[in-house]
Image 1: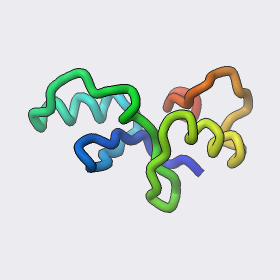
Image 2: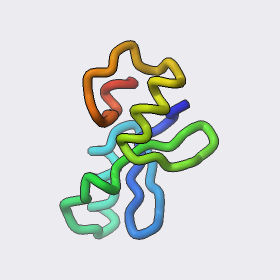
Image 3: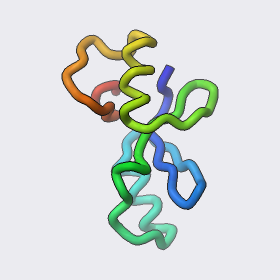
Image 4: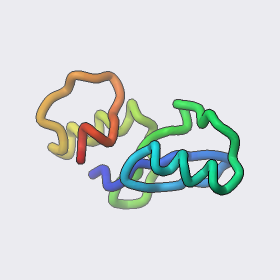
Length: 79
């Protein structure tokens, strides 16, 4: 089950409710924009990081999605 948005940057996983919130936090820490899309994903209830494609499959399998209209998962699809 997906529990939070996440960005895996420089080997560290940062989490939050929305990716844009995490990006703003990273900027405050001194990271430069933009954060590559391929570093954006989610974490599951076991703390494992999944990219957006993997997360969509996991969310659908966990019955967190009522529809499957995108190739990748966004936090707006969940909450």
